[in-house]
Length: 130
Image 1: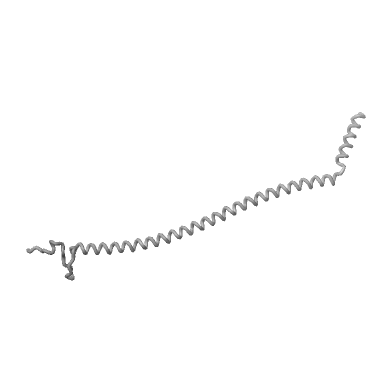
Image 2 (image 1 turned 30 degrees about the vertical axis):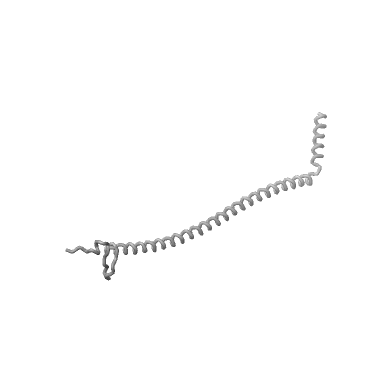
């Protein structure tokens, strides 16, 4: 069998009879690897688009959650202030009620102190006469 001088020099002919530096098997594997790499790059691009959409969705949900959280905090603070206002109003009403009761006692029993003094005087006269 005759030795291929071009093959020994690292030169080969392809199926179209073009002179190539790579062996046909290596060239075929290189092309397959290139196609696989292109597919991989395409899939990575699709993955990045999906992840980007997911990140946007999560960011939107986080903003909505933060907004709802602030609304809840505001509502809680409003309830606390309403409770404090009611408590202050209740104290004012109790003070007003006590004041009105005292006014009523003064109006209904104007000489209560005088009557009490007179009763004490009567008691002491009675006990003094005994």
